[in-house]
Amino acid sequence: MAGEPKARTPNRWGEGGKLREEILLAAERLLGETGREEALSLRAVAREVGIAPPSIYLHFKDRAELVATLMEKAYGEFIAELRAVGERHPANDPEGALRAMALWYGRFALENPARYRLMFGVEQAVQSRERFAGHPVMKLIDVWARAFAACGYELEPDPFGAPGTPRTRSACVTPARMSADRRGALLWTGLHGITTLRVTMPVQQSPDHLPTLANDLVSALLAG
Amino acid sequence: MAGEPKARTPNRWGEGGKLREEILLAAERLLGETGREEALSLRAVAREVGIAPPSIYLHFKDRAELVATLMEKAYGEFIAELRAVGERHPANDPEGALRAMALWYGRFALENPARYRLMFGVEQAVQSRERFAGHPVMKLIDVWARAFAACGYELEPDPFGAPGTPRTRSACVTPARMSADRRGALLWTGLHGITTLRVTMPVQQSPDHLPTLANDLVSALLAG
DNA sequence: TGTACATCAGTGAACGCGCGTTCACTGATGTAC
DNA sequence: TGTACATCAGTGAACGCGCGTTCACTGATGTAC
Image (tube, each protein chain N blue to C red):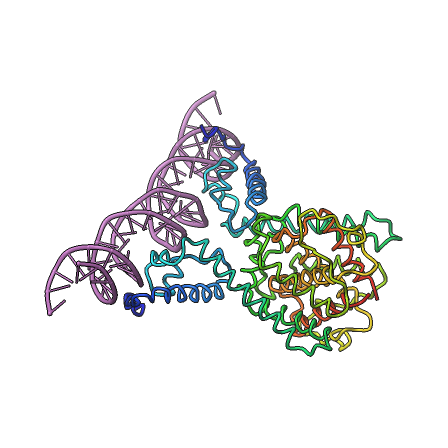
């Protein structure tokens, strides 16, 4: 009935690592279907791969380690692609690059909601400052800041240096000219807001809604 | 050891409804602690109230109905309070009202993450158009649009009228002057992005970060 | 060329857990006659 | 004033489920002597 439940033959000696990849791929597949990391169970992954549940423990310490691995993979691929989108634009059109990146970000979030949630969902909240140092999300913040810097705005010296670094007052009150970092943060958070609300609420479904909002947002942040 | 496990005496005749309120309050309390609707179990609620799990079924058809009730309550209170924040401002300072509302929105999200998630979390995604008609979130969209209208921007005629209502081209491409509705949508999504990312990533924890970002966002949207 | 042993890849059965929900019930309070 | 009955508020025990994880194991492949 249910296909071949016990067809699997063990990998050869030294090829045990192949199963690790199979597990990761199956987990990504399931995540794409169910949408929520919390709904991803080891037993479901095992079923998807066609192995016994304990076999997963040959490659991952526990469920948490599997999820962490999925997350790192997702971050790595996402940031690399976002950067690539910007770099594909001619260097003399930094604003176009910014718009293209914003649009790609929005599209990715809408087309891959599960992956997006895996990275930026509340479940994945970074608890401690220590774990945040070196978190891949810092690379993302940097990508946005540099994209604005390319448009002529100034980078802050070291926005993530020592915690409690005193900031000048002009950086806390609305400054005469917002830094590239702050513009980047506003763009990112704005895009995040647009896309997560869009996933949640199917409001104003016209297909050009996302591009329009994203474009308006970039325009607002390129002004002044 | 564990207090009084069977102290409860039944309510009087006609006062069965009291338990319903107790259940809702206990569920809200638990939600505030655990943070995630999915982690809210009927059995945990029953424990919190001090009743047997089946007693919940005297007042709610099933788990889904309990959660739906919690959500409606949260929306009602949230929107009423947001409106009130705006109305407390003098009528000749609509921009100040807008800033106050934006700030209150951000504070609420950060201080009540569980309630916020209950309303705007991805788990609560509105599936169908039918269920969206009359959804409380439309009231929220309206509140923002009217707040911008008070600042002198034009309201769209009927943004949520018949689906597929043809829009003028100038409303889809970046228009010469953005409508109050679109400004409202950008502000809402921007605030949503700022706050959800803030909950997730404790980046740049300086206490005035949220006010500054929110203020910058409002400024950007009041320009032009 | 044989054989004992180590290592590898993977499994079957079981554990204890908390869950949503159903069922038949208990005991107090009201009502009809 | 009594009594049979209806209604109300709530319970105890059980159901079947899927879960993460542990345990002792199987059987094939390599290695030392």
